[in-house]
Image (cartoon, rainbow, N blue to C red):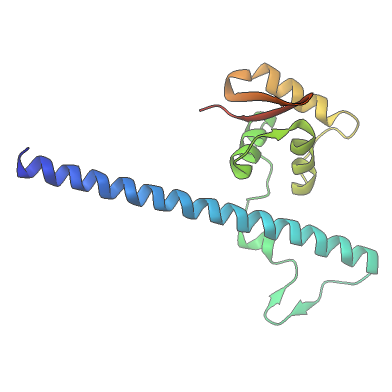
Length: 145
């Protein structure tokens, strides 16, 4: 191989390594964002139960986490996009019950009486986007490669 080809090959390897590093950082970011969202829900629910108003602790207001990630909790335009976003964040297969629970945690709109059936319909109509496996008699869905 010529020196030029070796240089290009090294540059590709470095770019691939950086890409892999960034992908790992993104996974960590998603975990942190998810944990903050869960804590925010817990804090808000606790305040409602106690009848406590929002109070500032130190420099950070309790409800600040949502502002750290602007537009992150806004529901995507379609249920298909929403399901894909949840599965990408989870990085594992989820059941319809798990998907419905994630919708509720994020405050996204989903039919109260038959939300799971709505999600099932979206997954069935768009089956090429998902993988499906069974654990016992429960179907779990993941993102297709």
